Amino acid sequence: MKYKRNAFRKLTILFIGLFFLNQFSSFAKTIIVCETCENKSIKEAVQFSEANDTILVKKGTYHEYNIIIDKPLTIIGENYPVIDGDLNGEIITIISDNVTVDGLFIINVGTSYTEDYAAVRVRRSKNFLIQNLVLEKLFFGIYLEKSKDGRVYHNKIIGDAKEEYNSGNGIQLWYCKNVEIEHNFVEHVRDGIYLEFSDFCTIKNNVSTFNVRYGLHFMFSNDDSYEDNIFEKNGAGVAVMFSKRIKMLNNSFRENWGSASYGLLLKEINDAEISGNTFEENTIGINIEGSNRVLYEKNNFIRNGWAIKVRGACYTNTFTKNNFLYNSFDVAYNSKVNDNVFDKNYWSNYTGYDLNKDGIGDVPYRPVKLFSYIVNETPETIVLLRSLFIDLIDFSEKVSPIFTPDNLVDKNPLIRKMP
Image (cartoon, rainbow, N blue to C red; front, side):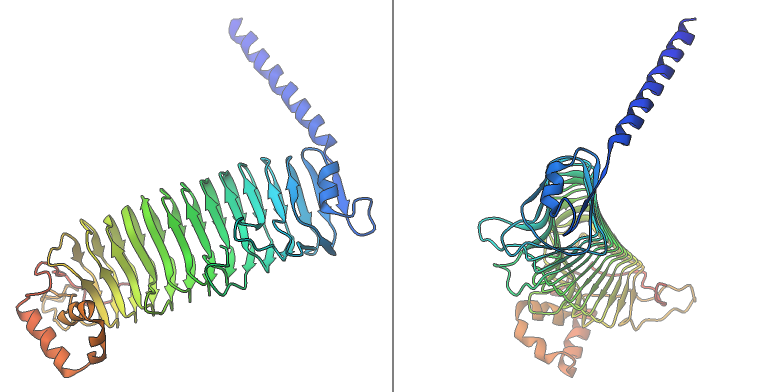
């Protein structure tokens, strides 16, 4: 009997909850904003709305800024209405949980040297959705601050940044957790996507290109995943610093050229996985410093200046099943001490043979050339690249290593490229 009473009590509570939920949702209404409507501005509509209402913004141009969303609302634009901030400052600020902003064209965010004005800011909120926005003439694009459990999806962010000092970032996360950044297009800002102190985030299927500094830049952010993104033609490529347990899978790093450019910079990265990525036509494919216990697997390094440049304090890393194709230098090292493993990689410069036809070269391959060591010490000597003299000194170092790590060798080089 006691079991039946408890079951009946739980069932009663469930029905009462469903009843009140239905009653509550029935009170939610749609408020229309247009030039001839009762509500002619989004700010007015927010003011007169109640929790869980929907605000439908009709096509038109609305000169507004400092729109504070302080209650759960859904704001939807019909045919991309223009929200013009007239360079006055921040345009939309969300300070409530359960807010959706969808389908707006936002322009003319104010520029400040003391405040980071954004087209859309989410502050101390959760369960938010920012999607289908077009942002132009901006300072910062989408700025997430101490927020969690949200999604930034399918937005187009186009800045006009020329210098770092007077430009902001496209998508910025600061002290955030469990946020999905997917299918966004970002260009001509300072950093395309920037994370700081933001954990358990997913950055997926984004395109970040032509940015002044980095396509992606993150620091002090752990347990994040970066998958299927394109980072192309950015000032200095992608910078990843002071983070743990990072996964970077199936991304493309292309055409990041310049004296201080690279596809990917790793600094103080530990216990990470970098797999299935393509590094093509960068000054440096991956520049590594102070990073340990990282697995580099099934990556393609194609026509880079340096495929990999190891600058020191890098231990127990594994490089396996990667393709090194037509790079000027495959690996550069600035130390005679090596604690990293190179095994079963394909090297286009390998000239060995495979007598037993098992797909593994019978002669080990040394990826570090003496000339790469010389160029590290004296960059001006790069003008001697491809000369007969360089071939001779590289051959002598191969026969009797003096300057390069004698144990840095791939004992099982692949004869055929990894698919």
